[in-house]
Length: 188
Image (cartoon, rainbow, N blue to C red; front, side):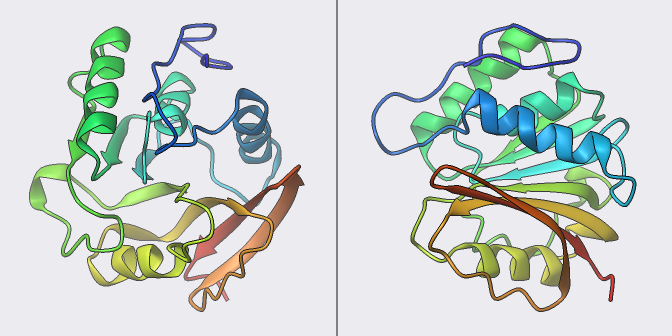
């Protein structure tokens, strides 16, 4: 796995071994960032504050940092995956503008002051088939984690239904067995 574009283009992203994580493929990641770059209704990645839920390797967050995001909070509960994210932070020398939050994305609680302002851009790539997207979005809303107008990029399996009430669908795409949907918060 490699960074697709930006400051770290071509650099390798370490990923956890085994079948407990399913990193977003380079092709899907490139497509996600093309959606962000070429849709005038979506704020740009450059200058964004990013939260990467169910981060795994952190590939989506690191891609955003490579493309000009100013901060990324990686939320990951698995110790092995957090270790890989730490190694990737070291490899990319992103010490001052990244943090790792050891929590379940479906049990975030209130946003701690130490992570700064609410987030503009959310990546949600949970294990497929477990219906974790809606609970994670509710945690972001209730805990004050996101700005009004925030964008969520949600990667799920094709069969999963999304019951998302306070978010508006901007666009969605299908890539094999993967669905990528872009939602905006607080927009009617």
